[in-house]
Length: 427
Image 1 (cartoon, helix red, strand yellow):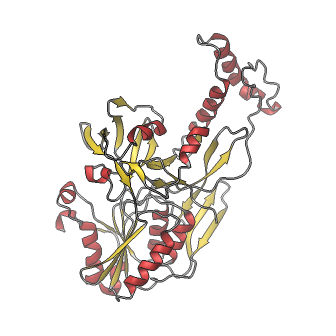
Image 2 (image 1 turned 45 degrees about the vertical axis):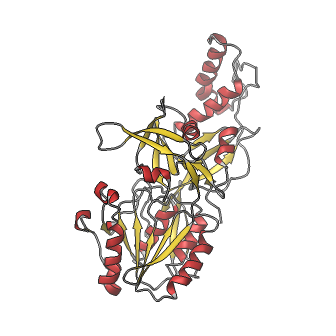
Image 3 (image 1 turned 90 degrees about the horizontal axis):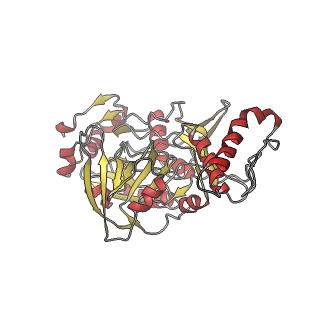
């Protein structure tokens, strides 16, 4: 099964194109496909292509303006000679940007090398997942226990300055590089937040970011609690081990916490969902030609009968939404919290010939088992519970409180509650 790509930019990944991680994170996409892409009619370095005779005949009229522009900059631009490789890569980048798809992008060789950084070890930064959002880098989710989370950085925040540098129009990789840095050093972020009339200022001390994939404990009321922070190599094994330990204590129900989880490998998402769903479709992929591919439960679930509540928020993306959507559609559990991020597209990476980087392009959409689109819509919770500023300041968790209440007060019918709002102030 194809794997979702891992990235490690420090903040997010899905740069989302793919978000980059300011400390660690994953991108929802596929393993690199083999094969290259030739650019017809491209002049060799240092050679001006004055004719488009190498362009396929059916595209010569279409590409005539491109070659005219190519010749103009070579003949008229004040600073000569030009770097033809840089121009070529800029043309590819512009073409992919014209798709108006935040998840499709071009990465030159250096950017791609950065993109492939392994997330297995410790990283140094503020600990947040990010993505490209127009002229700015946007926070997808601060990582649990990270300096970003402690400082009050939230999903949806836009980074408009790093220290004294305005980031408007800056490539997100450069922004990520500026935010990253040695543990113990400080970075100042200027943030634009929806609903705020003024910019917000944050001084954040960087740290080594070490993130456990799965955490678990028993809560009051004999409720089991499992938090999954990402969908990586070790997630499935860790989840099974911790589920066995929890279920041995005969809990009355289980809370699966996917808040702030940016996603990860597709096959890990399916394996995780399979621990709670006994059989049937977990997720569908729909391609541009209308065809679909389905992925079914693996049939090895340890917790397919226990009453279940799943927590999601704006930082729950990609594989998190696959799991939540499958649990919701199969009526296996109740979804509690806030509408999730809405990362429901499938990307593949295609390397270009001549070691000229890769094109990441959206090839399909993810759908829930019932065929609901996740893309730009997210998963709407069955029970909406917001987390307020006062809750965060007081370290209250009304979403978790509501989950426990459903499991301990609603008994076996808890997961059939549908579509009502629980005000956070009532918790």
